[in-house]
Length: 112
Image 1: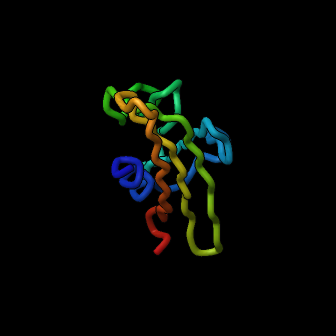
Image 2 (image 1 turned 90 degrees about the vertical axis):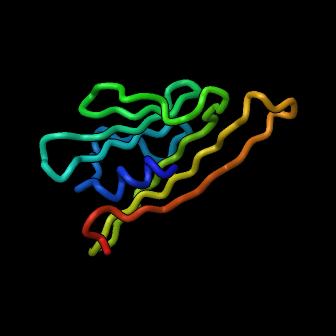
């Protein structure tokens, strides 16, 4: 969650065309301040993948953690833009299939 929060805080804005909101398999594409590059965060199978300009940087989760759900929601006001995140994680080593749901809301750069 820390890496996602960091990337959102550093972004100039949200690419509304290439992002998928309010879906269990969310995609968040963020335009960087330089205006020529972007970061994309998405659910791919059980992985939480980070892309930089279309190139896979890697899975943000450890080997034994599965991503069951990733939901992004955009919050927009006249003065700021934010992203609300809901992610459900599962420990594959747990015999009971223990799951945790994490929530966070992050304001984009310049929205304070």
